[in-house]
Image (tube, rainbow, N blue to C red; front, side, top):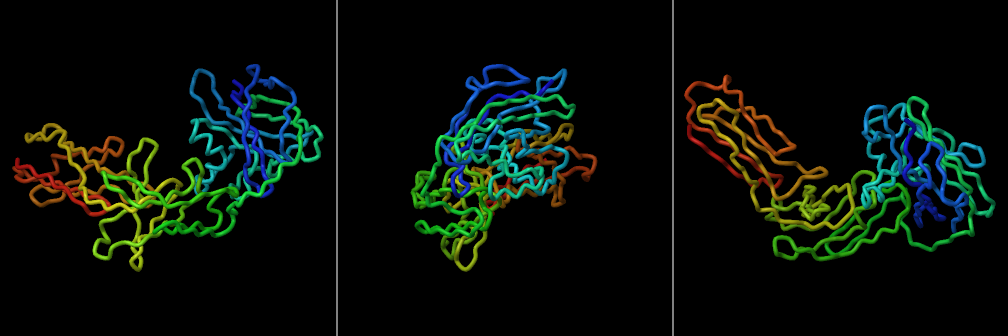
Length: 375
């Protein structure tokens, strides 16, 4: 079964390598030789990069699998290519620039980028070029994209690409290969070199966020649809007598609090964060919850406890910790992270006639909860 192409994306590239605009088109037929509704695509740009939303299927399955490889040709010359023959897990983070991260976050679509962003260090692209297509002279280019699977089934799409005129910009951008520091209110934000995959227009401002009915000073950093390569730091002052009670929090897509932890250095709280959004230094005094699911005193069925916290750990933050004992001796529980369950059924390893069970659970800020039961 040849790969399935769903849509083609045109990214207008600016003078500094930034993405100025994005346009998407769909196909008038179902492959393997795909066609656009118009054979000529005219773009107000001097340079562009392409992307394809696509997937692959195999016989006997409806699963949508990843793509094995592709080539981009301009006037019959290969300008960009890739094959999934090998991959180092150390480069997993760079996948955020291998696909269109913004499109994936906003639409849930996997669009393979067929050009290399200026600060993307991903090392497994073939050495045919960056894939950025120059159309500044207004001459029509013949574009051909060939997508293949492991068994050499392939799908193609071809069209003419014409640049209407050169697009210039005077945006004040953050270069992706330099250190950048900005202060907003009580917060100082610092990005290291190559924190982004291409130059961006990043807005940082001081805001106020309400948590548990109380206003907290916060900092807004870009938006969550922009990918960050690694960690950057957010620093702010912290009360000297409450060093262990604070953590850096943000909000997920469902409005739930997530926290990133951090360290205290010379009266400053320093958090390492790997995503953009709105962040606030939050005083966490709420202990985790322990819910008893089952506790069979006859020890014929497993003991189960659900442990939850109002904050979800992310980045470098520690999750919940726990310690269980029976008559003072340590018990080895299994932790089902998917369901937040602690499970114990190793009853043949404990001494006869046990008396007192104790479970202690604590969070990143050392807020503790204890559950005890007498057998």
